[in-house]
Image (cartoon, rainbow, N blue to C red; front, side, top):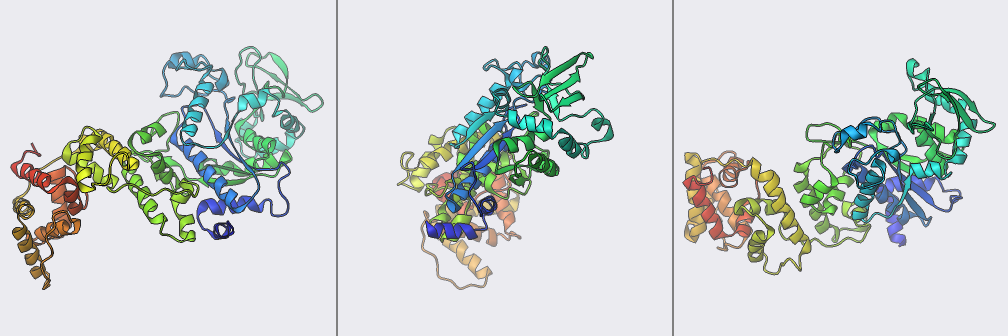
Length: 548
């Protein structure tokens, strides 16, 4: 354990760097509350999106890294701001006309358009928890509505009344004159309509902890700030929540970064040191637009898990959190393959490299071995060549290529085969465009077919290629199951037929035979797909059947 802790204390992996910052808070004395508190926030004004998952995952990685370098107990709270008023109706939910009747009411008082839960806020909270539970996160769920109404927030709300002028000074510096003229940190919940009111305060009374205001009709009301009668504006709420819970760490998106000094100042005014923070870059959709839970653009958690493993999504989230990343369907195959590349590398690495490897943080140090004897990208190409409708079609080829592999012994590969078929049929197949070969390509493809059918022709082409390269090498051993031998045939054909650059030859193979401009290492593809099957594919391409 000491070797692991020593390595973790010097690791440059970002979860360990952040964990060391949190630990530094308590280098003189342990926390009086007896634990270090990590928090993530969620605004349930729309359906949970993949960025929310990423926030919890990344915070969990830092929490686990902290547990390696410290014996101080930890907690993770996922806090839902479900007492916020619904400012607009999300565009990706049903029964929108009915929802409009509840505008400005707290989300936990808004009609559930799906009619499955007590409110829209309860529905979205349940979805968030289902997503988080799918990934096995260890967390405590907090609802702002319960937090306000149960009295857990009362002491901090009273302090906010006492420090009202100080907090207002912080806020007014950040507001335009027009907004500042009517701004208050307190938002009363109207006793009759139940709506969240954005109205100026006539009085904030530190003697009895009440606020006095006029509603939209001019009627005067006085309410206690405690017991869920009043909530805080979202920026003061952020800092006040940190103070109420004594939060040690919270991460949030770059769009919050300019507000960090405000959150920190309010937390400190209320008597608690501000937490450590980590600002991550935002996720973008395929058009480069920020992913939004209200518009539903980008890719959802359920959509990713339709086409790839949970671990591949975790891998994507680990990479470069301070760099904006395009999060759409075309990133899935790369994430799948790179995750398994890192799995294969992990067990032969020294401890420093292991701690820098994403899979260490994905699996909290208990890293499995990859059973992917075929890459995900190759499975996609196999699905394409075989026009596969289900994964059993792929297993017919996999079994010949790797006889020891079965769905039972290689469950990860079996799952990947199912993902590949779905991904191929939904995304690759609709975009496939085959073409007929040019005369040069036709001659080359004809020779490739002949070389696969006849060893003598294969050796003749390899010898011609060596002569063109000025090499005098012995003939290779003929082994049509060997990927390198098959690749040498493909290279030789391209060289003999004068493709310059040689990548034009491979591009021709992919466009004529697979209907795409990019593809696999073709020798490996032949070994997996089968020599006879590849010959048949070449025959179809040469005959124009694929292009037709």
